[in-house]
Length: 255
Image (cartoon, rainbow, N blue to C red; front, side, top):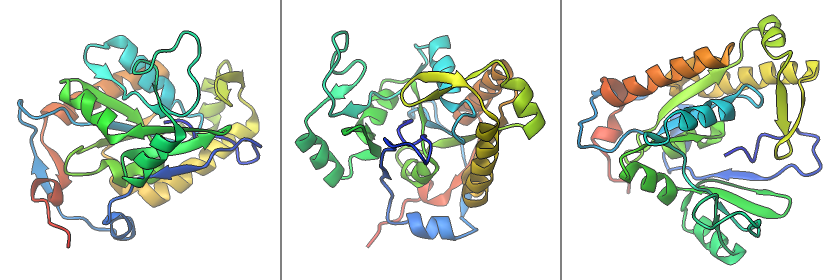
């Protein structure tokens, strides 16, 4: 969900919230986690793929291209919103359109992985929407804010977290010189020098706080190459043994 990737000086900057299990704080504060080798069985649901990275690095574009390449294998969850549908939109296709009262009730019952507000309207990615994709046999691909990592690293979703990292600053300038930055809901403009510096600073903060939760890292210096790397990583996540938290295999009953 890209609601929170907005500039700090934006007058329409949305609020953003994530669902976090009770173990979230301790997991974030602890440098160690008991892990075991996990091999997904063919009859099990596909693992959720969660992409994250600093604003402007290309997370959303990677996700979009991946789904467009093979929509029979990859799919994103349909988000919820309280805004009114546009003429061409249908509920259950682009969004699930709902009332603020129902949305607030879903928030109260912890049914969202992430949710936020933009220009007076609420948007959210529900656990049920992710589950629907996984139950269909497809690989669910989402993009998340870093603070949502613990919400997707659960016994049920077993997310494979892919961090999309910007290349060094000089390479960043070179590879983005003909690219455009999407701001304020799909308004495109060329990258500025301050965008590169903000991207690097955001990357440093993400890595310092969440590096231990990344299952795979992709340096996005070339979009086509990054798509290939992402495909390879996703196949490994589904078909090869991986180290995962022991609690996913031996879930503990929380008191």
